[in-house]
Image 1 (cartoon, rainbow, N blue to C red):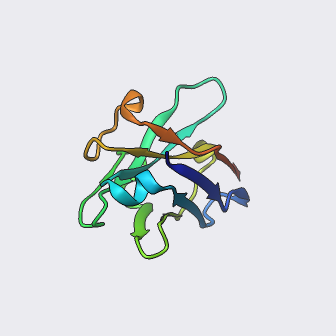
Image 2 (image 1 turned 90 degrees about the vertical axis):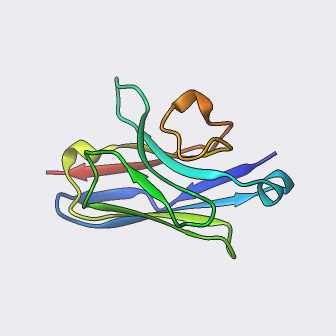
Length: 125
């Protein structure tokens, strides 16, 4: 089993920055190579891929809507993945979820085996 706990959400203004964290734990997480990814879900919309990173941290993948504004990183010593969000826009408002998959850098939601509980990010205009 893998447990994922997100933190760092909040209410910010457009143009501000925010950093989300996701702490992973569990024996399965330590034993296997998982891609860690951030998804988000706005009210009335499907959950969408935001950014993912391989276990080594050497390869990342971003949704077009966040490229150049968001940066995903990973500290394996702390079993934590981060999402640095800059130049936030009102359309970034959503619940942000951390997820783990054994499939390398997939953006397919159904291929993610473990999910956190989510953290709310609200960007006011």
